[in-house]
Length: 366
Image 1 (cartoon, rainbow, N blue to C red):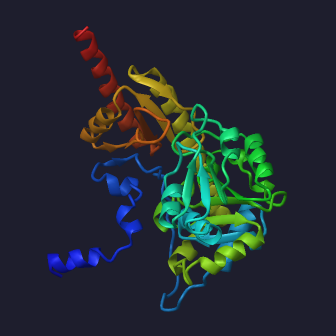
Image 2 (cartoon, one colour; image 1 turned 90 degrees about the vertical axis):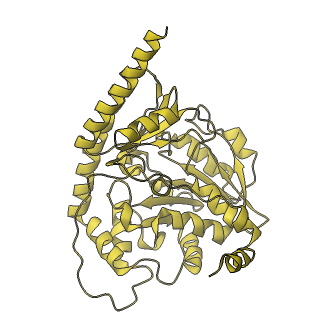
């Protein structure tokens, strides 16, 4: 295609598409490096085997996966939808319940960026109510909005904070006749006692998002779950693509949700939680680290003197972490994913060298 013809095709795109700034995923915004600690992935990757041929279309909602996840989550099978990651669950909720150019969603920055981008791509307004101290919900601010969906991330990405149950219940009570309350529990395996899934039968407008990408170590699988009242699930099933879950994905997901797979996940979580605690202790001692957020996930948020410089220094050491300074309510922060023991040792050495060197330079110029 000639450049001129390409430009002509570009003029056919919707104005919304031309204006939309896409989500900058860790993988798309950064490349290279030997140690990837920028995408909240689980470095303790399990291994699985595939069985069978793939010349037939898969089930839209494979029963083995649905039943296994329902048993794991403590809900009924009719309360579960499996999708291409929790991201598709976010998109389906907005497409199913928000009228374009009419409805809105409410989010609580700093938080996961796909809520807003999915809404914008569906011409749905976004109410932004900042977290108080980047930790707790601003209930008065949330109650002042009139959304169709309220998104709450707990543990929250990127801060790692768990939103208190009493605050989530307050939101559920306030919106019980007007909106769905969506609690994103992508990282819940790292603090399972904080799950609100037991509230599903009490609140029919509660929706819980889950994923196999984090604790289960299957980010490359793109397999997520929506837990909700059957009426919500049925609405989403009308909107989901005919074959959203590939057969290899379904096979691996079923293995991951077996008794052996869940036991392996729990062992991985225990290792990561220990490594996270060790890293928090280290980071708290480093000169130039101004704040360390207490985390309940597989990452830690740090406030530093110069986030961009810190990220670039670690790139020079072949280590990728993520600058989150563009998040509303945050300044000069970096998010560090918890990697394998060897990766965390490399990170420790590199961070000690960076921060101690900076301290020495400051002394020399004092």
